[in-house]
Image (tube, rainbow, N blue to C red; front, side, top):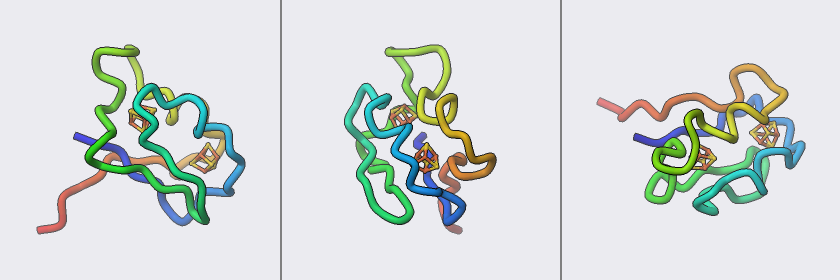
Length: 66
Ligand code: SF4
Ligand code: SF4
């Protein structure tokens, strides 16, 4: 599973350096590469980007489109 960044992202840059897998790229909004994001499994107990993000709802679980 991976997380994704929504339009609510304020491009504050807080999450970029927190990712242990370099899965996050700058942009508006910022982007998480689903092929690199592990939800921090194996590195941390909780998703680091979500913990750092000051905007509620900017980082959410990526739900596969049906
Ligand atoms: S959950 Fe972890 S691995 Fe995934 S983008 Fe956020 S910091 Fe990177
Ligand atoms: S921490 Fe949140 S608001 Fe800031 S760049 Fe990352 S996703 Fe966007």
